[in-house]
Amino acid sequence: MLKKYRNRKFWKLPEFQWIFIDGSHVRAHQHSSGIKDQDISKSIGGNSSKIHLAVDSNGNPIEFIISDGTTHVMKIAPILVQQLDVSETKTLCADKGYDSEGLRVQIQDTDTKANIPRKSDTQSNNDHMDWYFYKI
Image (cartoon, rainbow, N blue to C red; front, top):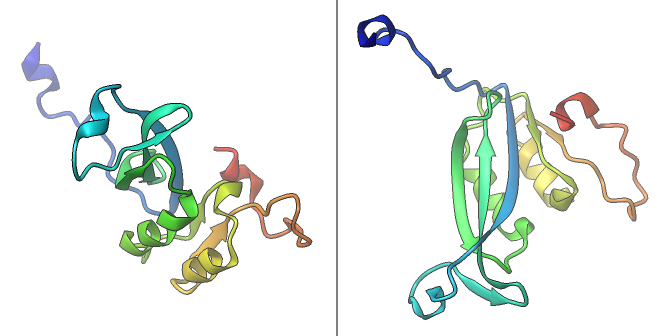
C-alpha cells in the first residue's frame, strides 16, 4: 500500500498570484499570564494572542506574525506585507479591518493591486474592488 502512494504529491506548490492576509484571536491558557517575554495580553475576554497570517492562492500559509491579543491588525499589517515577497503577486486581499491609505500605498508601491474594501464611514467608494477574490 505504501509503495502506491510514495511518489505522489499530496500538496500543491505555492501559488503567489493572489495573497490573502488576516488576523485571528487565539485564547491562551488561564495560567499563562506569568510567563515573561510572551505575546499574551490580558483583556476582558481573558488572556489571548493574535495570529496575523498571509496565505497564497491555494490557502497555504506563507508568512505569520504572533502579537498580543490587544494589538490592532493595522499595527502589524505593514510589517507582514514588508516580509512578503510580492514580486509575482497580482492582488493582495484583506478585509475592512485593513482599510488604510498607507497600507494601500505600501502594497501599490510593489506593483500589486490592493483588494481591500473601504469602511462604510469613508466617503470613497468601492469601485476598485474585485468582489470575486474578496469572497474566496
